[in-house]
Length: 232
Image (cartoon, rainbow, N blue to C red):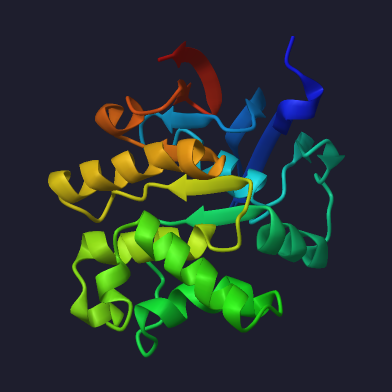
């Protein structure tokens, strides 16, 4: 029995359907899972199996057709846009396959954005930026702009931005998809350190079994369903 005090995410009987013309498409079917604080979980499976849909639902970027989502024991299934914005600013960090850095800003300025959106300023912002840039080994590049960085370096900056506001949950959707194998392995190693260093829970969506091997739990998905879970 999981300790309720340590439960971060609880998904129960979650389903998502889309209408494509006259056809009803089932993207996710009756998914139930729990994520405990500090865990690193990976979701693997072929394209179209529902991995990214599941992550988008947990992050409030899409709405389920049925089922429930709870974060920190709070039911958020039907939370409004303003509530989800607050949740993402306070509890959730998201890393995408595309880096989504702002070209005209420096590394440090890009990383600072979540803190500025929360209204934080001054020494607190500087200290947090220093902390996360050191964690992703990008301190020496703080004054550079995205165009001056490699793909792997840009993804490290995107990760720093996702963790600078000290969220409890990191959602990473194919974060190594635009990187070569060496850069991808480095990014996965970095994700492995986050639960250990900061206590984050990490949910990683990937098509790579190699990337998934770093996780505590690996959920395999097929046709919108969780088919099995392997504990590493």
